[in-house]
Length: 209
Image (cartoon, rainbow, N blue to C red):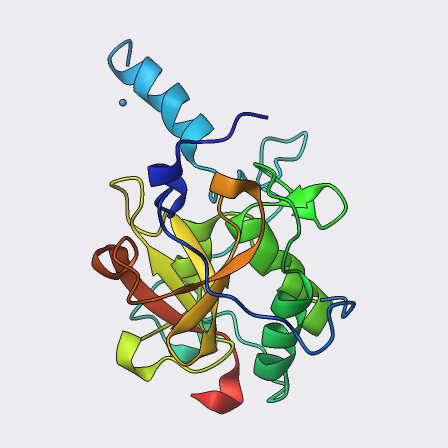
């Protein structure tokens, strides 16, 4: 699987990740030749936007209809108030895990949305789409200034909204799975590359809203 250029996964080559050692490292924790070519290229580059599974009937096996501004009851929410803390712990336990485009589990490698959906499934038993933009569409928008540990933070790294994402862990830091340097790591939101590319934040845990 090809890695995308560093500037397309959300990390500058010269940027050093934040150093962090988890308390429990072993914790389980996509328009023709004009358009057609561009469509194909977009599919390859959208490392954090894996496609939903499609059944033999042609229907997506994942249906998510909630959009920002919709009634709160339609957002994907996790009811357990401890889940936000658990998400951070799982993310820290995955530090150093290899990157893989389309990856859905730590053994095979993870991309950014794969990391988030994997952690949410481990914490709540529920499934998110393997696509950063779709995750942004079905989760509750909050202001970036309101970010709390366990919230999701999104970036525009492909000249397309919500093309990269990570899990906020507090103190201006987030965990993500970039393709450059090939492993899950911690970065700062005020990083010279990420700061101008932040394009949204979302909250998953209902009790922390």
